[in-house]
Length: 144
Image 1: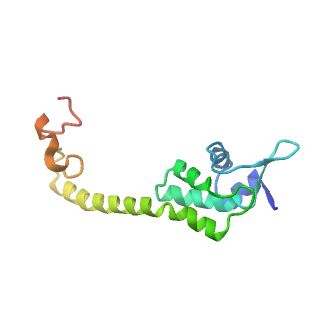
Image 2 (image 1 turned 60 degrees about the horizontal axis):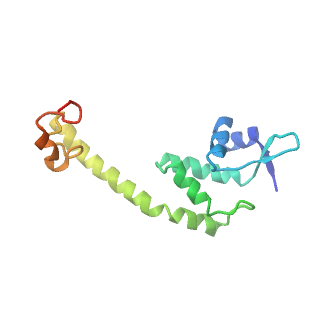
Image 3 (image 1 turned 60 degrees about the vertical axis):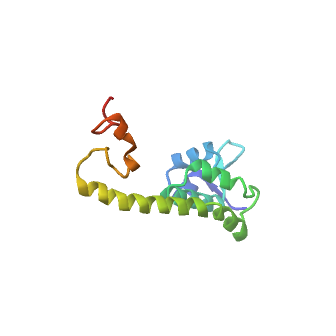
């Protein structure tokens, strides 16, 4: 098994050493310790870090990444099938996020188009004008 020092792992993964320590504290990756108590990472940690970075980029919470990683073996590099099975669990969540973003994109254009900055009829923050019962104006920003 090829082992990487913390500096080598950080350089190869394109992250700061502090990011590796953070990921380790969150239970996303793990290190081995030398007799001198220095961290060493197995080569497969690079794939895990790549998945973490992509997941963060698309808005998947680190806790969801940790749960997904818990289904993978620690003692060896996961197989292609194991990676595919893990990522399949995110398909529905990603579809939901895509739909929410598309909805936001469409409604945000409407909201900016009116320029009123009022929540009395805002499709984003006050769908169906439910805040009208509390009075006019930006009800969430001003006291009742």
